[in-house]
Length: 126
Image (cartoon, rainbow, N blue to C red; front, side):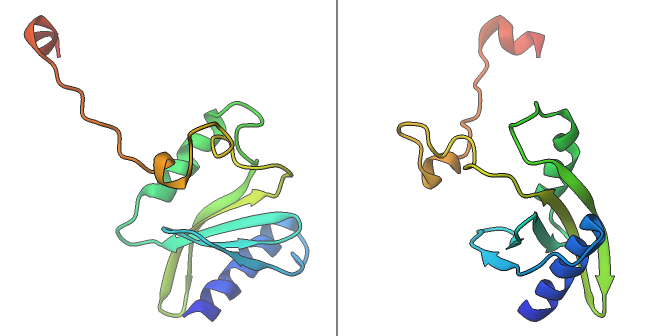
């Protein structure tokens, strides 16, 4: 299965760049299959039942320049029995925003946001 994800990533990057993407390596991710090349980064996730990448793709055009890498292409691909959702970004130099902030590590960045408790008149307005 890993080989099929890699084939998909190469095909996605080649289509987005209009040329061979060059060597691509696997990057660690807890939720996506991520492949990094010299000029592109491809994120792949099983299309069925996952919405995280959908949200990331939907937000990309609205984020300020420089906050995230430019989105080159996104969509759904099917090859054999594998249907995937993908996003292909231009590779840019630097590090991900937030990871270099004091007191912020990978575990902190993934902490769920606490639910907001409403009381009194605020609860009635919402």
